[in-house]
Length: 165
Image 1: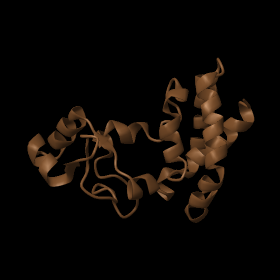
Image 2 (image 1 turned 180 degrees about the vertical axis):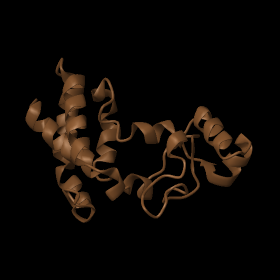
Image 3 (image 1 turned 60 degrees about the horizontal axis):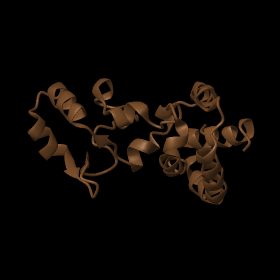
Image 4 (image 1 turned 120 degrees about the horizontal axis):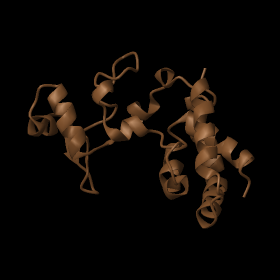
């Protein structure tokens, strides 16, 4: 069972949004020296408890950016030309990035597994980005991911306890 569950995650994230934004603003001004180490520890501990296959909310509600390398790799895996793959699955968004034409993700199976897991986009491989180096540089992205991913919510709540600012 996911804690928090998806039904309550949106409300919890909304309730904590201002607190989290203030925390992240302080973090950007003066990040603790051990931030990356602490984030890696929090990330690893959370993902020992969290099974993404019980949720897959990220795949159901958002779509990744597809880099040129992603497109080439996935198209090759699907035995398609890159242009065929683009026409079949992608569109260009307002930031001029390639994204999925629709969500939930086309490659998400009924059991929350991914049809292209071994060749999935870099954005999917790195999600939810809570173990990224220089974490303070991606706090805006993290704020967007809190209402999507219960693990991110938990990591940030633990982070505020472990690294009070």
